[in-house]
Image 1 (cartoon, one colour):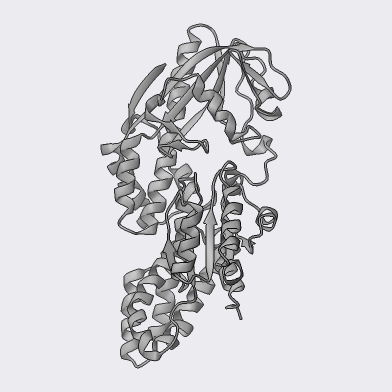
Image 2 (cartoon, one colour):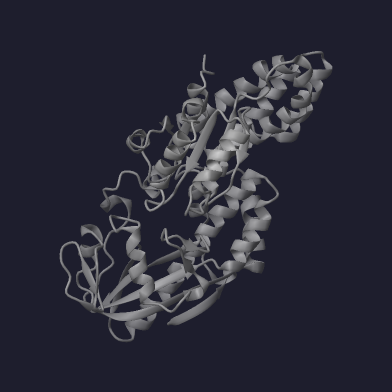
Length: 214
Length: 226
């Protein structure tokens, strides 16, 4: 099996150390970082994402794959600068809205986005509106992701949308929302660009919003 | 308030429920993940002090969508109101995995490994759910001596009962019951805490409950059960 095939299998199987080793060997073979990403890593994440969507893989499998991909990407990242390419698929600011302390769902999405090559700035939980706004500005974010698990806090998402609009940032950032009580209809009603029901769909949505899907 | 601290090793932790929280009802973990889950449970047992507390209050007249606890009307919605209709008393309760678990989980999660984070979260949820089961067993035994039965437990935020009504439940309990704080968003801290109500009475039955009798479309429990 070639090193790229090994890398594909390692990421698909969620084996981080093996993925890092295979990446190192693929580099030693002379493959460029971008070639390795395109021909080993992205395909593996696409495959595990597809398995998840049709119920043949579950959240832990996705996370283990994302973790393996992140390990391999960490090895490639410093080398990508030399190729004069943009290593990041996009910059994402993510947080749980004010009044809400739930973080696992938001962290799952953050982890999957990192695994998909996004640069993620995790603001944590109970994030005030102005912190979302300044983070979008400071990190020149392409996407802001908001999470809420309570019916009593989901309304705060609209306030963040309003604050981004007031700050003149709304037109340059895409807004994604997620959390147990939310829906597509709710996302549309607050002026968000999209809603995702799980971490895998969040990655697909982020790619769609940034025009990264083929 | 009657309260009790429960060592984790006396709780009956349902592994299937932990795995369900981590993925779905159809998720079957491999040996590596099973070992990691067992390791977290073992470590949790060394630090966690789960606890419950409750007050028993008289039941007043109910309607098709409300119940009366003491002098307070609760708008539980039809699913819960009908399940509790024969109550003579209500146990208003809280249960929690405790501050110790929350603090330990925070440190454990700081390793940055998302799988560890997922496991710690799922185990924390099961600790508090099994603490509620422990409370129900305690209450069932106690009420049996008076020839009374108990219902399932019901919580604000589920099956049509507004989360805001949690404030009414906390009003029956002492300040920070079992060290649980309720913030203005009706979020409990420690996050792995449950509040709710259990009907008590000579004609009370444990009716079918859960996703099968609830029409909420966006509940995460319904999503997990698929």
